[in-house]
Length: 105
Length: 105
Image (cartoon, rainbow over all chains, first blue to last red):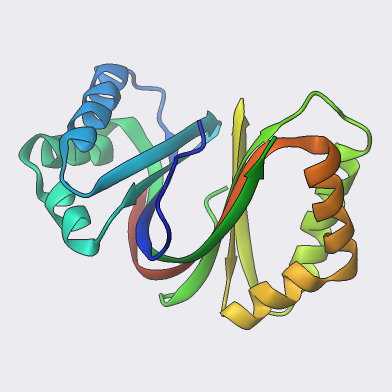
């Protein structure tokens, strides 16, 4: 469940969000966006958690891959639906991962 | 609940983690670490969610602030307890936030 990312540098997109109470295709679209992201060149993995606040972090090999993903047609439609229906608030942060470390037992 | 961060550039520390079943002071220490982080120079805010996987993102004005926080004595102790007891796995990623955007209704 923790994304298996390569040695830095690589990129992370932190998407912090608060949902409205409107369902209307949200779950299906979220699943489809994950499926499409996984097909994009430069996609490295993602981690997603919701507990009131939702945080989804996707990892990418470079900035160009992130821009292409942002401009992907179906994703543009999902972004518009997101602003109009599904989210009460969100913040997207595009980051360069400079160092990382960790452990697992 | 979404951290109110300034204009980029600033820094983000993404801490992705999976807990063990051991409680043993975890909640108290987590609360205390938030309290101590908020006192650190350069701390900008944080977002924290758990749903099986836990993701905590803390935001900082610069890398020096992150290093000082990493080396803070009580935090070092919590890191050791984390590795020895509370976490089955974690990954910490230190990132430079280059761009951000968002909305709220």
